[in-house]
Image (cartoon, rainbow, N blue to C red; front, top):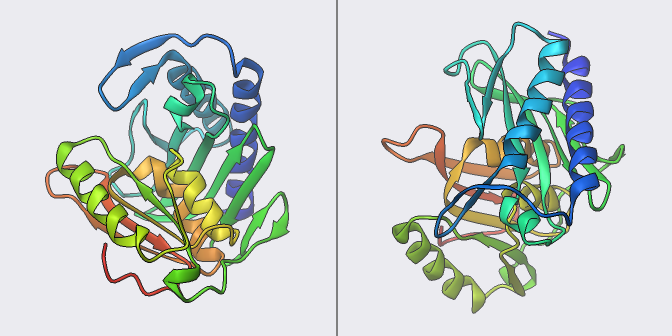
Amino acid sequence: MNLDLILRTAEEAARLAGDSLRKVFGEEVVVNEAKHHDLKIQLDKDTQELLTNYILSKFPGHAILGEEGGEGSGGKGVEWILDPIDGTVNLAYGIPHFCVSVACRVDGKVVAGAIYDPQRDELFSAANGKGATLNGKRITVSARKDIEEAIMAIGFSKTVQSVEKCLELYQYYARRARKLRAMGSAALDMAYIAAGRMDAYIEQSIQIWDIAAGIVILEEAGGRIDLKPIEGKPNVYHACAWNGRLELPHR
């Protein structure tokens, strides 16, 4: 397996998709489905198709698992895990905080990933054993050890139960951390921890495509992530990601 080629493909695919999103940002979006806590827009489908076509042009035998379809490989062999727009609601409302997330997983382990923020032209990427970078420059997690100094992200999920747990976590850490954030993109939350901008991210119910690229980027930057599968919900996890130095007693 050529890991350098896989990483380069992830980076190129993320940039290609991000460039297409930048061109249409601010225009009216076509909403395919509107739920109480979420939106599905045509741009998600179009962007995943663009990603899929590009990746399969390089690796025609690989499997695709994405937010907008694709069965994956069932954890065997090589599969690409795609989130065409992480932060769809932000994009749809004109908030310039969203990204494209592309990861490659081999036999159940994420080996390479890229997260591209088209509005800031920031490409976070990493591959196993090669370190993590932001626009080609090495990044590492923060050295902060005390919650009182930390900036944390608490993700608010879509179910009533998970929202209640998130509110509990928010109250707990609001009294302890320096600042809390809920910015609407799990992938960027993890990338920001990898770059030392934030220190921890917790979400009670998150899909694998939201965090797959962030896993390898964060770990290669020196951080840690704890994932607990949710029973009966394939590819959904309780996630706690941090710089590896903080003590997080409540998750």
